[in-house]
Amino acid sequence: MANGVYHTGYDIEINLSREDLGNPEYDGLLGEITRSVGERPRHLLQCLKDRRGGQCHCALDGKSPWMFVRRQRRGDKVVWVAAHLPLTHVAAPQESDKHKAMKERIARTAARHGLNVQTEARSDDGRVITDVLVTGAGGRIGWEAQYSPITANTVRRRSQRARERNIAPLWVTADVTSDLTVHPGPASTTCPGSASSLRLP
Image (tube, rainbow, N blue to C red; front, top):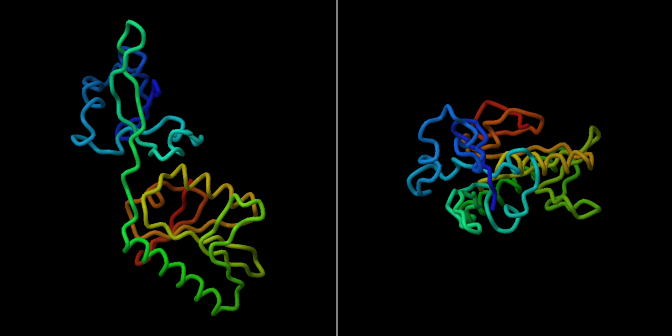
């Protein structure tokens, strides 16, 4: 349980231990964040640790980085706390097929141009598995085909691990609303069918 969350709509941090939630200028904020998840956007509240780029163990333990707020009794007091929402997304068969098809397309294209190709390439320490690792005279590119939901922080962490192993991360998605495409920064992202090549933090 946490006593703080990040409001993705207002771009603010909320302190649940304070009566004004640390944001006195936002009237009705408590009522808004304590609404049922079915009555507000699922991604409205985010784990602060995940938002700041850290590794939240709750999120890694089969739960999402998205939060909900509820009451909890602590001794003789009732307080507001934030808890992680469970992961509800399961990759549909068509997503899996698209993922495989994109990996095959990348691998075939790279091989046709005389580059070395490895699929599901595992780093020496086993901490990085790349969908398609393409190696040429200029270096190594780690292609990642991403068709299921993923947070920008997860992409940052995985991209950083790749760069630490001299792999340039390159993410591919068909979803223009994905966190892969809406946050500018240093990991390259492409959207098939789009003329733009975007950057992720």
